[in-house]
Length: 457
Image (tube, rainbow, N blue to C red; front, side):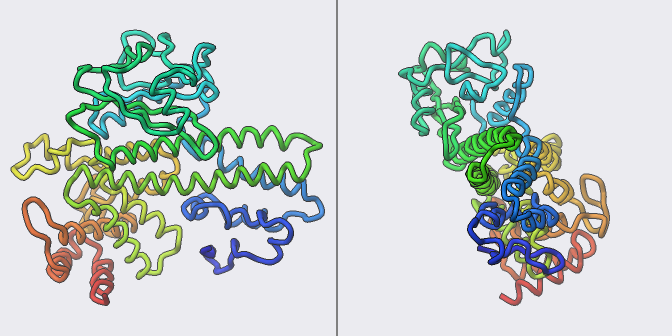
């Protein structure tokens, strides 16, 4: 386990003998949270509260810990697509479905939730209910009551019940789902991807894709990761609501509180891992669409992190810059692949679309709360040291440090990777070009650090 250190050098999450005692979960944050969540959502003040709770009043101490946890992992700090209570709220799922269609360049996307989680759309007729679609229906989408029971003999129920991805030709779709079909029946297939966490299935993401254009593995994995992230977020929300009710019980036992805390912190740990997987799969999907390098985003993130280590930045900043490096080209995933792979001259309209792609990515990230802190780094990574960059013409040190680092790492990786219009450059040639552009495009101190870092290898 990696020991976490605060700015003053005092270890808050080290595995101390005072904390372990008879209850190892006293050190829940060190044991259960992923690095990303630990660094970004757990304050030193909160850690000290947990460390110093009154051992003579175990139940009271446990309740205080649980209150702190549910205040942090409330719906506003996980995903903003959960906890709806009326059908008007569910229009956000239409937007999610349309975003998936745009990202994957498919015909349609539909999102189903288990009746338990479709709070504002409960149905006595179905166990799995349609809550969002990329298709614009003539009437209220929810008036059709599209869905099925778990024991129905169809692929949607099977995907939900068995937690497995199922693919069938659209022409074989059951009558209950016919209203969802978009385009040509004969040349499409449905892919049902279950939304599940480690405890249960919560829904299904249904994709309609042209049969002649199979989805790449990167795109399928992105949807699977997204579906699992949503499902774990829903479980966490369910547990936080249950915890809130439980800690108000005056006669609840310490063992019951410990059990609830174990469930809650295990789910938080799962969420942290899945958030990291989501970011990594999103980066892979961007690289797959660009066809420049299947590892470009990962290479940028890795080099940015090496540079952060060389500069001896703190752990939180390193993590933020690493994630920003993975996602700095996220806007590309909403653009046609042929646009940024085009070898010939771009039209004015095409050039403007490419120039503005970081802003598209920022818009996507703004709807994912746990990534909010990387937004400024991505938003300003096209700025230049001399102030002649985009989007706001920031100059010098007014450009966020993270933006300057990932911009430099992106430039070096791009130069040393093969492109449709040129071969890959050598390390020395790339460093020579970058050095010539110091004080115009790049921070000269960072350029010098990059040269020293790579020449040490």
